[in-house]
Amino acid sequence: MAQYNVTGIVLRRVPYGETDNIITLYTRERGRVSAIAKGARKPISRLAGACETLTCGRYNLAGGKSLDIVTQAEVKDAFPSLRKDLSRLAGAQYLAEALNHFVVEEDAHPDLFTLLRAGLLLMERADDPQTAVRWYELRLLELAGYGPDLCSCVICGETVPRDNASQTDIYALSVANGGALCTDHANPNGYEDHAALTFDALDYLQHLNAHGLEHIRAVAKIPSPSEATAGLARMALRRTIRWRIDGDLRSAPFMDSLLSPGRPPDETSPHQSTVA
Ligand SMILES: [Zn+2]
Image 1 (cartoon, rainbow, N blue to C red):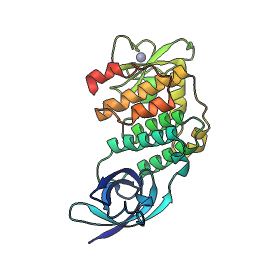
Image 2: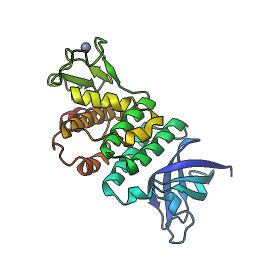
Image 3: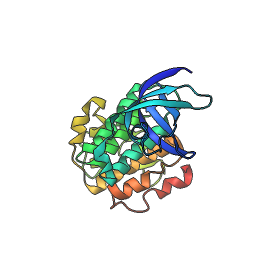
Image 4: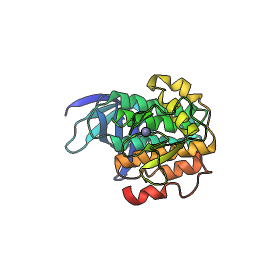
């Protein structure tokens, strides 16, 4: 049996049989890999800790008939602060689920691994976990090839916002085209594809988008915006992701209920009817 070593983060863990787990890892070296961890649910298993969801570890795997087998595992980072805070844990589960929708088996993309690790560190430390999630969504879309152009209108190419912009201007994000719309072309009431953005919400997303993977310390310090701005930014990116994956993220409603409890209950309904 061919053996190989990978560094990975456990995206999912599913109990199998009486004492086994099937784990889905996102690895730096091979992208997504699924493997069986035999006996990992026994109380004294050496594999148990490293096979917990949202744990980063070093794994030795052996090629099996249908599934690879975890032969050794060592915890690198268990992100202990996440486990003490339900809302941050819910956010971290959302990050893992979102990434899982954008990747396929055995397609290495080391930047996605770096992003997931950065996202989990941010969920532990960020002043505003909701801002950390928005930043992660922007980076995930970009690395998947769908990063929205937030600085110019996708229809006319004009820079947004204009130099003489007013705080009351209404912009939008075109969910299907993945880009901003200027005040002349944004029509959130007329087109379901247009997710409304106020001046402040556009500014907030532009500011987040300017922070690359190397800027996580700065992202951790970005303060939370107003509830209205946060809500519009969340809706615009959520709808963009839903459009790209053609479905819903199961962990999103629980995370939203903890990280943004003041959100209007019907905010996700208009688009669901066409995409979900
Ligand atoms: Zn325009």
